[in-house]
Image (tube, rainbow, N blue to C red; front, top):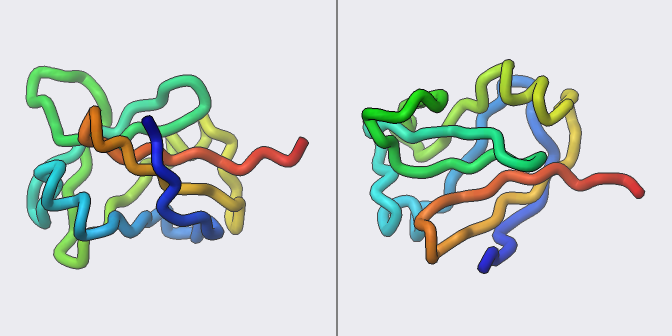
Length: 102
């Protein structure tokens, strides 16, 4: 089950701040690798599996992660697009979804 954490505008650098409470629970500590994978119009951010072929990114000292350009393009993210960050405690991951304008 997903719990909404926060919605905000995507910035041009592609950095997403991961909330520290869940970051430590999920093993996504500064200096560690995270897997980023595209799945059904969302990006899943989870602890890296070294055998996977997903995009890997380092967690920065301040707990942020950079969303690579290729994933931004798959989601059709443009600068200042609004997104929501969800917490998936069961799968120990963060889920990034764009807010679609219907």
